[in-house]
Length: 87
Image 1: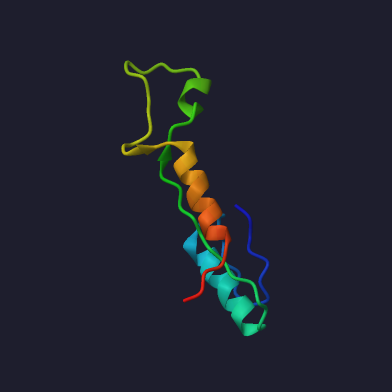
Image 2: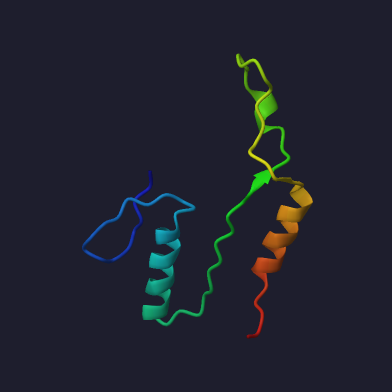
């Protein structure tokens, strides 16, 4: 697990994808008045070959928990979140 390199005296052990990491980074950017905006995209179950790569000793073929989305849907959401919108 990476340790977030923030200037605070208290160090939190945070993983990528942890909302605390995004919130901590966002508060640091606001404090320093840096004009960078953050968005955290939490990916759903995607139709990828990840369950076909490994050896399987289970009776049934493993699969992600439904609903399973196509990769194009996830790509469109990521591209949409990358461009700023006026409120």
